[in-house]
Image (cartoon, rainbow, N blue to C red; front, side):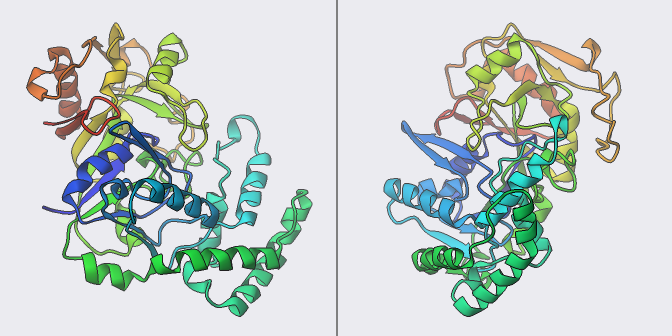
Length: 417
């Protein structure tokens, strides 16, 4: 079996956590390679609900889990999450790359400031978890990394330099300046609690390079920093080509792309197939479309095959998984966006700021399917013909097979086609 990457193809929240849990039984290591605790995975197994933000959902099956250097880590949040999962999973096997940059309190203050200076539709809709400023520090070579926590004197000197850089900004926006002593105490206590989890990349390579690895993406391809709907994106590269960089593992893999039977988005930014009527409200309620992290109601719309095709191409997707099919069961008709303004596009041009904002979808931009009713079995051959026709249309449009169909939140509500 080859290594596999599970990548969200929309604006996140596609159900990656459940599918990673479902697939991880056949893998030795599950690796997270980007993002922070602004991502959220909810997995339900035998009526037990697991909510994860940083730790890969392979932990539920007792798999080895690795958080690579491409993530940013909030010490307080990680400890809370680790302790909660330890209450449900006996001795979770979690490794942290020694090269991980940390999210500290001043990153959250800066995140708040960054969002406050924007207004109206210009606001990104950030989770204000400090993820963006932490990545800015990584690029600016100002990060505090896990491997630095053991050297107090070096750490103190580094924080003093950071304080000189950021205090004028914090004070100008009525935020408290950086408290070096308090920060060192917090980081020292954190290091004592997690020092046994920290490994360098060579440890992972030596122990897992010849074994089966499953890579878990966070957010979605359309939120990629370079390939998504900029500036309404996340602060990391979510697409599969970042796996080698973010994990430090130079291995081959095949990409499984995940998408919902409809589309959702949190925060501002273009959304051509968005619904502003009772159908959109129904999908939000039936699909429980509220952010795992933010608790905000997600914007809902019809499945957009134009953007989905773009996501498949930039992620080199070999096979697909469709989730939350059951949410659409009771609708009289189901629509799929097949073009923008009556035109098909080979590539979404995010470099043109007006490209998606000026897309006024008309009736001819949609393919309409009749309802498929309730889904009462877990066998593809016995699925309603209307649903199979819907799936076939998507496969033909994308020219990629749909191999996994998720009919609900439980692990056993999954069909392998």
